[in-house]
Image (cartoon, rainbow, N blue to C red; front, side, top):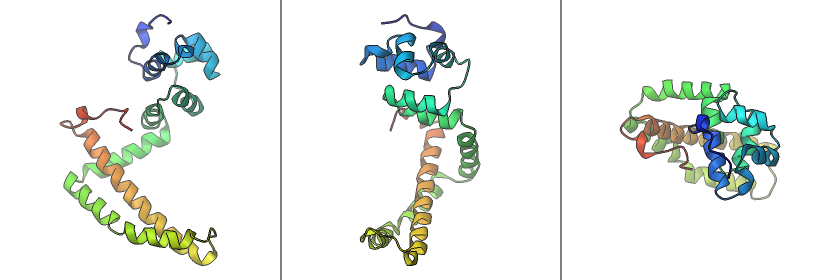
Length: 173
């Protein structure tokens, strides 16, 4: 196994590579990992030393190779400008709501899921979605988006509550 990089010990990409190295020797050194990943060794070093941000494609490669899907989440939450903006918008929205209100919104939005499931089955059962079914399908998607947004708002609230966030970590997937 390669030497421990003392300057990178708290870097998420380095820690994920080291964890992967425990199961696959191909990741035991930056040189081996770089070759396996198809990322230049010096670039991998700069990523692991927090000198540069990785590209989304590199994150995808590392997350897959290291079996570390949390790398994608971390990238989207902390590096990607689109992800950062969406998190900020969600934070502004969620700050106004109590957990009780968020749960009520979730229950309200998910209450109709059984009926929406029936509609979705009726639309898709013949394997063809025709023009007359498009409006219903759009309505189903809106309802699904609402449920997803409410789920994410609850998760965001819990993960950012000072009393609770210590019980959850990034690798809970």
